[in-house]
Length: 154
Image (cartoon, rainbow, N blue to C red; front, top):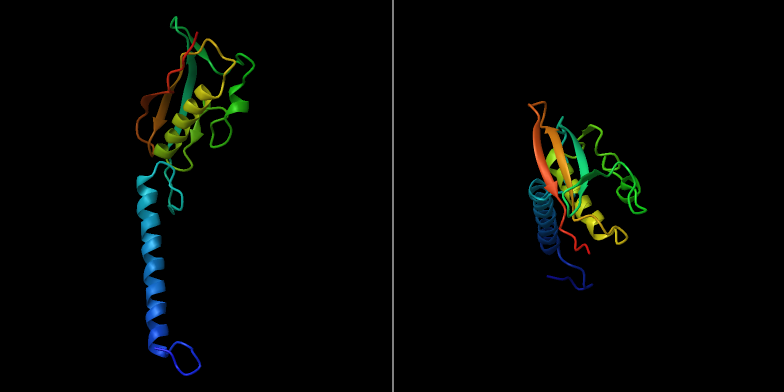
């Protein structure tokens, strides 16, 4: 196993290199599999991304049923200051789903929840709702509704 100098012999080094290569390859395969199953696909790469598009009408729903667009500021908050990146700053404009439609909608869904939890001065919003119009790779448009967590309002 070791020679008189305490160094590893050739067979042991060869075996150790193979173990390192196998572990590295298995880790890479694990990252790829996770990328296809996870909502955000960290470590995932697609050479030919989707050509999907999306837009969303985001509203605040009040206890009395009013639906108020987040395009206008409310209670000292502005959507574009609260949510930035990934096309979420202006969701009402059509965007290319640069990281895939499912992932883009996962980002939007998380943004709705984040805004609902982090706007304490807003005392009239029961929940936020996004009506999303999307087209997956040029197919006919579909409409999906996403809702934030429900808030406790006085």
